[in-house]
Amino acid sequence: MIVLGLSALYHDSACAVFRDGRLVAAAQEERFTRRRFDPAMPVRAVRACLRDAGLGIGDVDHVAYYEDPVGKLSRQLWMGLPAVPDASRRTLFRLDARRPARQIEELLGYPGPVTFVPHHESHAASAFHQSGFSDAALFTADAVGEWATTSYGTGGPNRFELFEQVDFPHSLGILYSAVTSFLGFAVNSDEYKVMGLAPYGTPRYADRLRGLLTDLPRGQFRLDQDCFDLSGRSPMYTAALGELLGAEPREPESALSAAHSDLAASVQLVLEDILLAKLRFLHAETGLGRLCYAGGVALNCVANRVIRERGPFAEVFVQPAAGDAGAAIGAAALVSARLGAGVRPERLTDVRLGPAPDLGPVAAWLAAAGVPFEAHTDDEAGLVGRAAEELAGGAVLGWFQGRMEFGPRALGARSILADPRRGDMRDHINALVKKREAFRPFAPAVVAERAGEFFGLAGDSPFMLFTADVREPAALPAVTHVDGSARVQTVDRAVDPRFHALLTAFGRRTGFPVLLNTSFNMRGEPIVATPADALACFVRSRLDVLVLGDLVVRAADLPAHWAGLVDQQLPYQLPTLDRDVYSFL
Ligand SMILES: [Fe+2]
Image 1 (cartoon, rainbow, N blue to C red):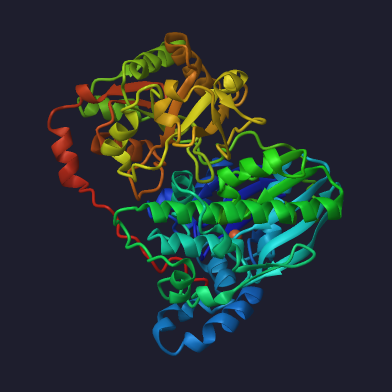
Image 2 (cartoon, protein in one colour):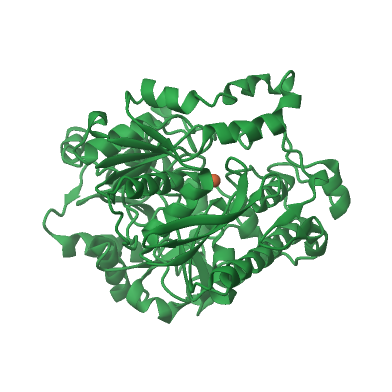
């Protein structure tokens, strides 16, 4: 039984393949088209995932789509119709509930049955069916699906039910995104910058923001709409928000002031408080001890820590692809279960679900191009020893191994790695490749069995979904945030033996089995997918060393004309941000 899950046509489209109830592959379209958050029907991702599983589109028994287009259309009409005759004409094509079915048939070449799974059911199932829990309370929060923005439910051996939902336009995602927009950042992509800015401020606007929310029984709430403009025209807030706050909106890319940090701190605090309150309702209502959580708001790892440490649930599982990409997994899991494929209650431990690259020809390419490299075939200790030695010597390393990660984080398959003990490393990597705001921290990876020596983690964190206190901030300055916390990844030997061995080898040399781990990409680009992407990024960004599978390439050994050649052939420009991307149409 092959079920293909799809999320598409809004933001960050993706696919997931279930074979006999088990997740075997998943990938985001952006990695193949090289267009960040590509919303197109994921034609390339589907082809790559099916091929990797030894399948073709003709083998698919059922397609599960991550939302109900008719339900969504009713909300789109309700919110969008008054604006359609004028400026929103260019978005009219979105008001087409047949578009997903038509594209599935025409672009994917799939004529068979399609089930449209309500969006928040897709989110909830993406967490429940990957949690390994036999029984759990379910919670989802995002900007909006069809109508739902927040939902409450329960899952069990033969039970999956959402029993309460909060409807649009009352939305925690919208509140957070509107403040993101007010702070001059891009909606639906830069919310994590607000989270990163928050610890620099004091939450002096929290009471005013809280005043926008009316708390109601049964998990319900209302969001005062005067401050928001959800018509799809920029910006996402009205003048009333500035008046309420007594603050000016920030121009994109302009300097950040203390007031901006204070506003970030305020919206973060308000979000955490309301999440805790809503989870207390869910806990009391269900009497269950375990929580499964997904939806875009669940990517807020600072709030996740608060939920795990101060919330009412004894155990918390957050779907690592908590945003819309991961909803493809949930839709496929639900449909697999309903078709009798018997989805197994297995805990997701590994998100390297993308296609495995063909590294076979790489050595031949490099040789033909006259690039010296070391091959450590069947020499695991030699490979990790060499990489660890470079890292301990201060090198910034591109690390490309095996199947690609699914979801927003690089977790050791498509990573840039560096020594976290060096205070200047954050600025150095920003200058080379990330070019991101100085206030944003990099994250550490640590061997799971020694995580407690370095971080005050309340449980494991294999997917960088929880922050924790750094025990000795001065020892790990490149990965410690201004409040002494870090967004930790714990690496299990059984899950990723090579990355674990690299961390261990680095620890043997330095006393710290910890590495700075950031995604392998230039600013504004998706994470690299193929060896060719990795090589191009390596040369353009002037990383020191590239480890591609078993091969080690040093930048110092590249032919002198390469850098100039790459600049000519692949001129790198910062992409302009599409500020209309948030349109809820
Ligand atoms: Fe969503």
